[in-house]
Length: 179
Image (cartoon, rainbow, N blue to C red; front, side, top):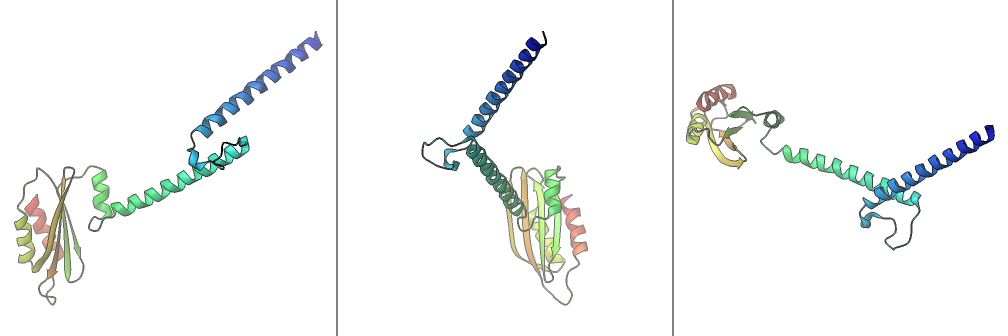
């Protein structure tokens, strides 16, 4: 009885091992089939070993990871479009409360970024008037529409460099105007 039990046990282990190898072979085939033919080691129709197939898959996965990192870096670079600060980008992704005003005092120049919704009506000339009343001459003004948001960018220069411009006062006046 003991010999028949051990023979049965050996047979069960052989079957389990054979099933495991068959399963692993199927998984390796599935992995290899996911790799584009341009990324295989040799482009000829020669049969490559399973180890070479796994090495090829590992290299391809590393290339994909590097590509993802590069695309993330490029996305971050694209999101840091001149004139849009990290605070505005963060609020855009978390549900922006419109309108948003950001002022950048760059010494003798002042940059105003105003983000509003398509349905928010304010007179753009009023924003320019506030800047001029506060001692800035508008050099350039532009806008762009992205989705349901309108991005206004105004570059102005201080008319009297001795007096300067009080950025906090300009900001308060613009907030009163657009809210």
